[in-house]
Image (cartoon, rainbow, N blue to C red):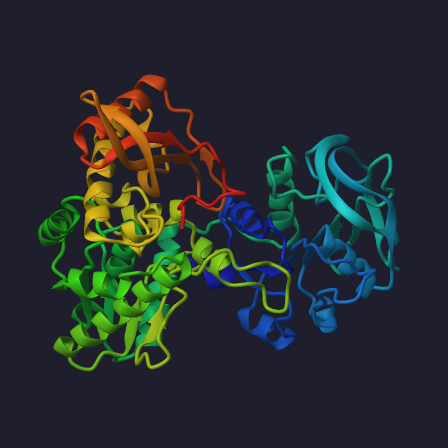
Length: 517
């Protein structure tokens, strides 16, 4: 049987770094399982998780100022190998008896690191390498029992260690692409210092998850919000594998789906699954609640609340239901929840993790909340899901409601569905379509003057959003050939009544989000 991820867990303590999800990705790229945890987790809670190592993330705080985020002092005395990154190294220096000082100048950008000791953390990396600095404080005096193992021209202790206690710190960011050999540094910590075997796979995650789901659910029943997207589909397949017929799936047609989507989802699941699946036609009740609503957060919460109400009603047909299974992913959690007591900001509420009514009678079951989208696709293939589902582009739970800026009406939905259909039909012909993360249309509440058939028009504008990404935490606008954009624009304007202008969104994430609302 595959080794469970819990047997080789790396605990990443989150101090609000914008790169903390990248740390998690680098750890998993070395086939080691990890979890992102609150910075103030207690020593006993950490010991209960039995981690092979601890990583202290960077963060925007400063030890030289009030309000610095501080972990429990005793986590440094647990005998667990530790790597402090940037602010994490400063914490290590501070708590172990060193001195932290404000740098004479903020160090930001590319630096040349000179390796003084290549026994472990920098094993096999040569005498120097490029790294990425981003800090205002630094360890001015290393703690007793520590030694500097790398430096830059302006930072004498760019990396330090206490070999006996297996405590390490780096003042730079090995997790980002601007440190080209950072992945090797991370792997040296995981394998050479923490003793990880690097054998974590999706197969082992399945074993771990099945046991965890069975333990949590017990003899209870689960209802799953099945939309046909990869997240909810993988969730349904995983929970179904764990508890079988005690899972009931509900497909809600909230009237905010793409053209022909409801029929497609029901057909696919009828052919490939033997699930207890109920179809609910709820378009009228969703659109009635959304009438007159223009604020994007209110729209998301209304849709989330209505989803839960539909499930609550539908669950009666399954008997007593104890859990609601949702396809919440790691990026959803990171974007929706601020670091406890920290400085990271809520970007938007996600319908899976926000907007739940206070009188909800289900407990949440979110088996994918520690995974990224590409990992979920791999998991789906391991579970035997058809490629038509596994490779689907992400589609937001609130559906087209967050792609209509302003009020959602039947007429606006008609226009957007028809425009979006043209986008997908033409994009599927693109030879690099497999490299595209998402491609869709957005209906703007902006009308402009046009000329069609020698007559003046005053109609809506469609924005095209086409991006490339790995896990949705960052994204870049796709450099689509002009002739494809031209074809999409011509088809929308000529074939979709109510549109006379098409524009292309060339903003990246950050600072923009992928969805417009």
